[in-house]
Every structure is written in C-alpha cells, then in structure tokens.
Length: 183
Image 1 (cartoon, rainbow, N blue to C red):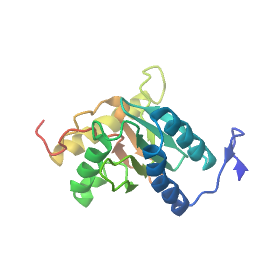
Image 2: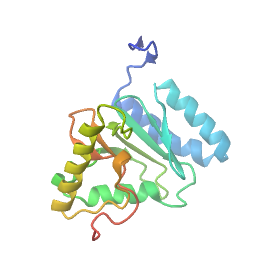
Image 3: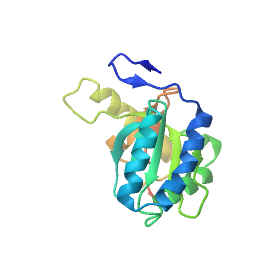
Image 4: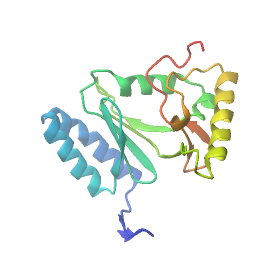
C-alpha cells in the first residue's frame, strides 16, 4: 500500500487477486437483496483500491486506474453485460483493438460482472483546451469503425477514450445493439 500524488491510498493488487474477487461477486449478488449486495460489493472493491467511476441504467462501474469492473445490479434484466461480452468476442482481433480489452467476465447465466481495461475518457467540455484533440480522436475512431463496417449504437463524444495501457483509441462502451449492424 502507498499514497499517490493526490494523497489517496493506492493498493498493489495483482490481476489474479482482482479476478478472484470478481468471481466472488456472484455470491454476494445472489445471496443479498440489491441494497445489501451493493453495499457489500462497494466495501469489497474499496478494499482492493477500486472506486466508483459511473453508472448507467442497470449497472455501475468501479475502477482502480488500470482495470474497471462493470457490475449488473438488476440480475441480467437487460442483459447489457452479456450482450457486451458477446459483441466483443464476436469481433476479429483487428476489430477488438477499437474497444477496451475484456479481461474476464462472469460466465454464469446472468453475467453479473465484466473486468476490462480502464480508459481515459473523452473530455466533452468545449471550453477545455484538450477538446479539439479529443474531437479529432473521436472523428478518427468513427472513421476506423466505418472502414471495418462496425456499428456502435451508442457512439457519441463521451463514449470515446484512450486506453491507459497503450494509448490506443477505443469506444468506451459498445452498447447493447448488434455491433455488426448497418449504419
């Protein structure tokens, strides 16, 4: 354990430890009501140095600066995690480079969690000096997707980023539609 430049405690957690904890999330989710499960999961993830990043309709995302865990708290009611995993693994190796790598995922029926690489998200504030850079990144990524005949139903400016591991342009969240659909 050490402190980063902002004074927050950081944890030296291995990928193997993270995968082990991610797999234990199934038990937490299945054996508790939603409120208790969410509370227990937050405590578990915080102990590994994960913090809340954001949420969508039915899932929440936690990150640690290197990885994110996307957790479906509705028990697969909209199958967003399942659809994201299916879409990702239906892509060729070249196509996958346009999305954050899915490192592991819940292989049970409801796909409660996805472990993926974390990305630096597009800055959507037009007053920020980096906005023009990010706009170029988004435009270039959209062009690459079109060239590969990929369609991301939820592609918009704040759904674009750069991977922290190697700085490649990626779509942060591929959404739940058919990625091979027509534009």
